Length: 261
Ligand SMILES: C[S@@+](CC[C@H](N)C(=O)[O-])C[C@H]1O[C@@H](n2cnc3c(N)ncnc32)[C@H](O)[C@@H]1O
Image 1 (cartoon, rainbow, N blue to C red):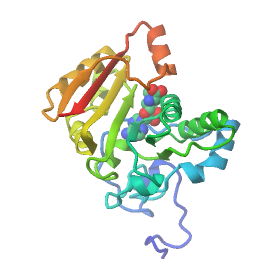
Image 2 (image 1 turned 90 degrees about the horizontal axis):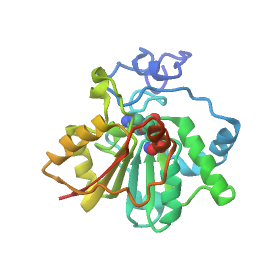
Image 3 (image 1 turned 135 degrees about the vertical axis):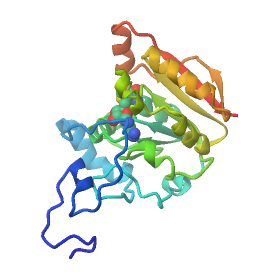
Image 4 (image 1 turned 135 degrees about the horizontal axis):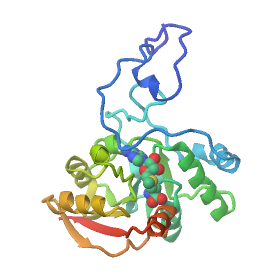
């Protein structure tokens, strides 16, 4: 038997199926996820940036149900002061995608730290490549990634009151009604975010889907711990592919900023 209780020689399959493989462990309770796992191949330049910079920029965290799982071990807490080697306002971005907002924000605010939670490894590779071209080959010292399901991780990964700003820009819209339950902005997730925000901390959201914007307003306006303070464009949010595509397809952009009341 291996240390994990797996019979010697049993190969752990790659990908999400590993979650329910008898060689790995019991299948966790089925849960509704805000993402589907997409392909893992990266273009060469992104892979090269990953190979060079991931060791420094992508944090390794203990996971439940094996190395390929997106579920963080809930007993693990990350200390931002230890990770960044300083105490600075912390921005957490959920679903940083290919990193346009993250890289622009981190360059604009070198005095802030940025932690990106993203399940899509090629997006992290793309972001590292962007970072590398912006800096002449380096990782930005104020940016780290965790390749993890943010919805689950944020319940336990960070200390309460440790986040200055939390960004949820263009979350997957799940436009079909039968998929609305997959949308990440929900009353339960609002409770999670509230625990993380420092007093006066801000949750910034943007979407190009009107009905998602309405549902965000409905959920977050009703939350007694949050107060809507702005519908202006978030100060550090650049125009991204999703914004351009939304506008090109005739949709309008909604920005929302809530503070911890
Ligand atoms: C529509 S993209 C938007 C990307 C980026 N925020 C932007 O504005 O360009 C949504 C991203 O969120 C990621 N995502 C969705 N659910 C997630 C979750 N629970 N945890 C971490 N990342 C998630 C997806 O992999 C995808 O890259």
